[in-house]
Length: 510
Ligand code: ADP
Image 1 (cartoon, rainbow, N blue to C red):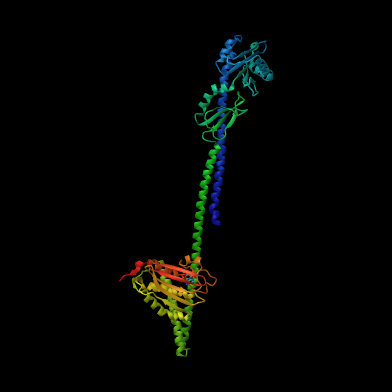
Image 2: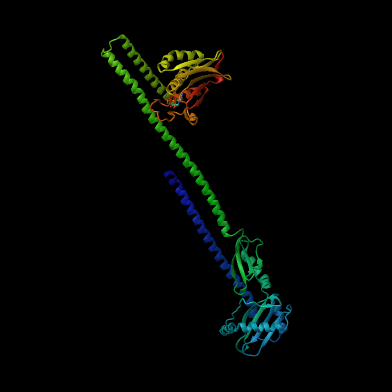
């Protein structure tokens, strides 16, 4: 748990930090876009102002407003021009110059008049500006519809002193945008971003520098054309899209990192657990072995002392004590040999001297020496030796060691029925040797681990049956060295069969 915390927490913290910084990046990028829009807008507004000023300043310079045709012709060079209304500030002058392209009826004059009236205050203010020699342009977003067509307009004042006139320039804004602003748009964007111009009231798109606009557009209204707005968008999606894409990529990378870390942690955890189990098994081994050694030693010293002190009177008793001492010495030797055998295996120093062996003879020899031990422990045994077995090439001592280990286990792990069967036979062309008991059996889920060093099947009474957990490890190692295998079949409460299968290559054809 601690390990998980130590390793996973920094990753999570880093993830949160990264995502947070992405959001900050997103905000910064958006600010950059807003700034960019501001500067684009500024330049477009300046440009519009400049274009319109060309018209108004040329009118400002004009002293003669009587030649209507000339004025109309001059203004008519711009096809967005619809009409120009001029009213004298101090004299009675009132003229409407209408573009030759536009068709306005008599009622048009009334519309223009109402425009004057509605913007009375504004017009006066423009006059005041003009008196201080500043020609200002003003417009507003009031609708001006004639014959179903929407027009735009702006106010300005021309002339000086008594010649002063206030004017309304009426024009078609969409044509104006297309003719004047579109080239400017293209010049500004240069393919870096998308600029659009649209009508605010209904979103009608007048122009866009790119056909495909992805994501949202930041919009701002134009100064002189307040019914229209300029928008800016990113090429290939919005900032948000880009940030989201990066966010997802980072999340995926983080997720992957997490998975790798968790796998790593799991591996470390399992390794530690294994190491701890091994340490525990070693501790059990030491305690078991010391117990195994202490018991025979105690017995030997006790009986030897008794004999030494001459307290044993009858020859029979003496013989019995000698037997016990011999048996205990054998047990001790057995134990020490097993440990030595194991440590040789561990150090990779065990050598095998293979010779042709008749397995049946070998079993017979072992049983001859062991039947006494078996009987002593209350066991009966039977031999089922197959005829005509081929000889095998094997290390005699090692095979005896395996057989003794297996018989020993059969004795140790039987409580009810005390019977051991030793079988030899052929499995295909492989010679095999089985030791079968009717003992306590082994649970199926433990079978896999039996051959691990120091491993003992966990049982409540494990300390009653002493052992080192080395016997089967040694058996497995010896069989490996003979290119053979060990096969176990077992049922809890019914007994176990340990079968040693020698590889056919070990058969001796002699
Ligand atoms: P040990 O010294 O503990 O007997 P082994 O390596 O010989 O060590 O055996 C490992 C474990 O396998 C034993 O502790 C025991 O639980 C189980 N085992 C081995 N042989 C038998 C058997 N014939 N019947 C039941 N359990 C057995």
